[in-house]
Amino acid sequence: MDERRRRTPRQVRSQEKVTRLLDSAAQVFAELGYEQATTNSIAARAGVSIGSLYQFFSDKEALLVALEERYVADLRAVVQQHLDPARSAQLTTAALLRQMVLAFAHFEMTHAAFRPLFMRERVAAAHALHAEIVSAVARLLHARGPALPAHEQQQNALICVGIVKGLMQLTDPPHHLAPEVVSEAIVTVLLAYIAALFRRAGLPPPPELA
Amino acid sequence: MDERRRRTPRQVRSQEKVTRLLDSAAQVFAELGYEQATTNSIAARAGVSIGSLYQFFSDKEALLVALEERYVADLRAVVQQHLDPARSAQLTTAALLRQMVLAFAHFEMTHAAFRPLFMRERVAAAHALHAEIVSAVARLLHARGPALPAHEQQQNALICVGIVKGLMQLTDPPHHLAPEVVSEAIVTVLLAYIAALFRRAGLPPPPELA
DNA sequence: TAAAAATGTGAGCAATCGCTCGCGTTTTAG
DNA sequence: CTAAAACGCGAGCGATTGCTCACATTTTTA
Image 1: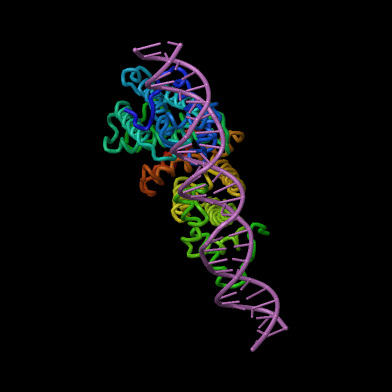
Image 2 (image 1 turned 180 degrees about the vertical axis):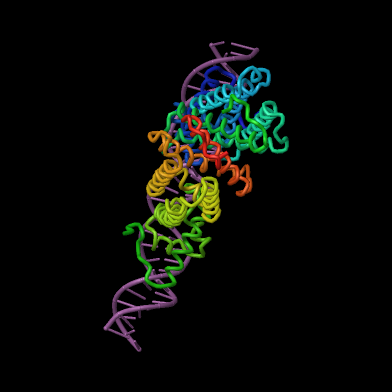
């Protein structure tokens, strides 16, 4: 299943080492980015020799791929929890958006290497998940506004996701805005944009959006 | 004035070389980013020996700084043309926003290294210009909506600039949306957001924003 | 307990990068 | 025309990086 992991660790000791290495890689990648991070520093921070690192990971990119699997699994769990149609049907659009944005902000805070790696590099599974999210948002838009032009929903969803991704960067240097402030602004922008979509289609926006 | 440029080129031949080196640096920086770009490849693409490169630039970072001066000067010209109060007063908010966003999209298309360098690295003059832009947008917001809470205008302006910066990334890989499509979406989002600001303050939004 | 398997280690190799330096060529000054 | 100044060149130096390998240590197996 994972050809980039050289030896599957059989002893508890080495399994913990793999975990520590991935934690260390996440930190160093977050601080320096993938290219600037050195495998020696990742091993050193994990308290592991460089030789041990290469017993478990075939090369530097294998660390990235393994981290990707971990992050994508975590993010997929968040997405399935918040984009589930059954759950979302019980909430107002405003409440639903707020919960989703806050969940995503929390994910980014607890997964420091997410943006520097998966927003900039070419990472296959991350892009597949991104496409899933856009489609799920498109379905959600269709459920909330069935009268909106269906052929535009995919693009509208892409804009919505872009708003979240783009504005969430205001929490990074050099702006360093508080995640709560940024999340609130994102919700405001999303609600305003969706309301504008209704108006552009000649429909009255639902009162909860105003 | 520029201590990082070793010899000020006195002959036309070498002045052209400096120009070619900066053009080449812009291309390579845009393709690979600053860290991954190599001075040898920049010199090679410019058709200049590596020795000549270091006659005019003290080190690799000097290329970045010189490029920064060029880009910041160009962007400042665009900004002063479009954020000038006298000019902007004659346009509707919608038309003004559309012109500004299109001008910025055109700037990014003609300055390929702008985002990969100045949105990610710590570049002093670029950040100063960014702050100027946010303040100018804040003044513009105040002019268009004097009744809006003044103490929020700086933050609202930061959100507006963040919307433009964040969504403009949809023109990059992996999305590759057409700049015209993205610009139109940005205008829609900006207008919707500004209208929402009026509503949140208990004011009726100007009809041109609807 | 002893052999085998798994794990741990870090000096150092090959490749790459930023940058220098010695020297040849072209342009300018007088 | 001649000397000086400016410019051009690229082999290669020192530093860094991803990664290997020969060998030591620990755990498992029988």
